[in-house]
Image 1 (cartoon, helix red, strand yellow):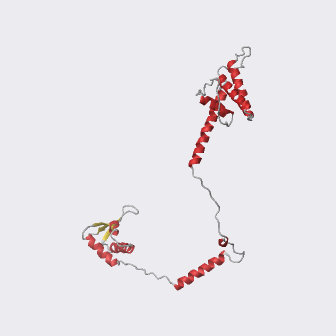
Image 2: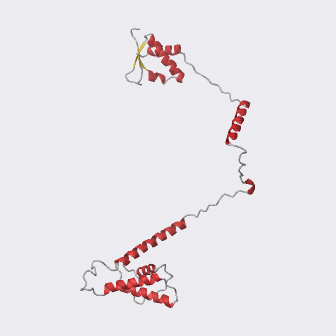
Image 3: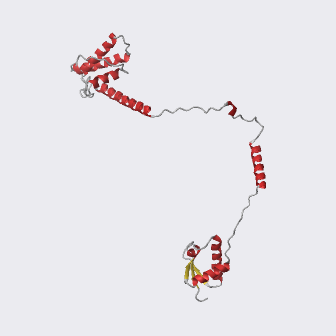
Length: 243
């Protein structure tokens, strides 16, 4: 793998090139053979120089970083200086973190590009009105909001006088005498009645009022007794046997 031939398109940056070298050889990104990758990276830079391509300075910055990591891994530790090297820290870890972060950004960019292609393109424009249909404001002082409201009120009044709206109101009445007879007929069948049940059979509110007045009439004549156990509860109508 030392004589790696590269025939690749332009890369977006040094990390893009380095990530391609790792993926193309199926190298574990967490265990990078730093000497091999450094040699291949430098070979690619030399090839770019021979092709007279302009290389950005960031490519050489990463090259120096690879050489520094390579020297830290291969060169022996300095036993005379305490604390200079930390055996628990892998010199490649910083590079691995940069590659993982760059790979994540690449995936996000691909996702956003695909979503943009799937999303229909929507464009908006300002409404276009022909010159003869343009709304022009009235001169200041010609008409006011008060004038408009007064004119509208006059128009509505003239229209009502011209075509008056005629309605018919029908009032249904239920006399107290009629409801008294109705209650007496009900007491012939039962000795105790529920007022709430009685009003369910009434036609409208006028009949309900007449029924209530009939109850009061019969109470005043001591024909029946009204019992209510709680406030707003049902009225229990009982026939007064002593009447």
